[in-house]
Image 1 (tube, helix red, strand yellow):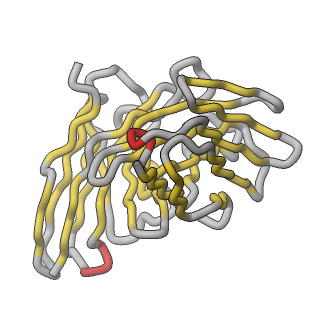
Image 2 (cartoon, each protein chain N blue to C red; image 1 turned 120 degrees about the vertical axis):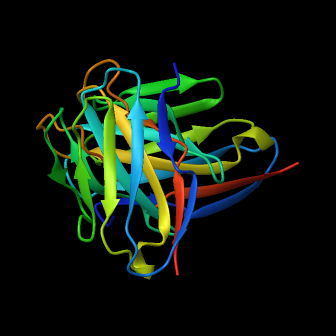
Length: 113
Length: 115
């Protein structure tokens, strides 16, 4: 959806390198969700951010929400082959409680051993 | 807990045929969703439901119908399949947005090909 743009669309990194994926919204964010998808499988929830300036980490993955810029970033430190997959951000744009999310087009990550 | 399950995993249809995709969740979630995923397009919401007996249209509802007769099940129907409906279909369920467990839980997907 053009409401939510991810960059880059694809990324190839050497194992051990750091990387960042960005997700930019054209509308006010009420919540931002990051998911990971392995090829041919469903989506696995990573993190949810709701408040401006919020930052969450899980293992070597850190996500931040810049509410003023309506943008979120996902940073992976010391990448490993297990980090390979498709990363998707999903945004809640409305305050109504329907739970609807708009998803970005995804970023495909390859990690070379 | 099985989480979110989808039936079938794969299906090939001919143009004009009909089929129903079944989604089931055992987490007592109120909200359920059907998405389709196409290359370079991310996930697009087809229909969703905020409770038993209720359904609503998402971004791309044309050509699809849904029903939520039981809280744990959400059915997606294609009355007359078209090649443009070739896609991977994902079902998801969640508690209300903003709750501590408000994230959506996804099924493994159904890969549908329409010839």
